[in-house]
Image (cartoon, rainbow, N blue to C red; front, top):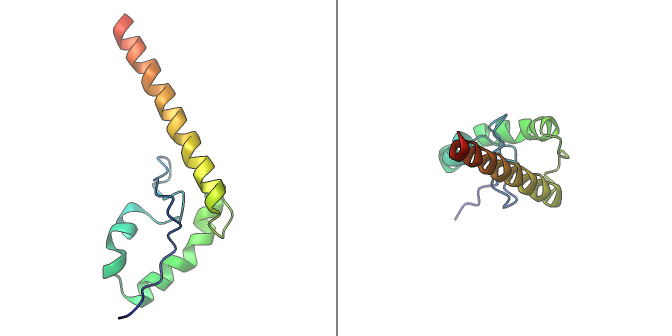
Length: 92
């Protein structure tokens, strides 16, 4: 059985602004199609991940702790926005 390398660090949340996973830096399409990609295509994506993670403000190595903190902050911000939106709709 062949092992397919993956950059996944089990922090699976897509950044809304850039559309990239906060854990590994891949797009949703790349994550979904990873197993179907050729080894060359996976290698090309993996080569681009350090730059993508840096653009997200994360270390290029895919630091799990920082990715989890960023994902938690993003979820918390979304909950606050939704709460304000519901409050505005109820009073509007």
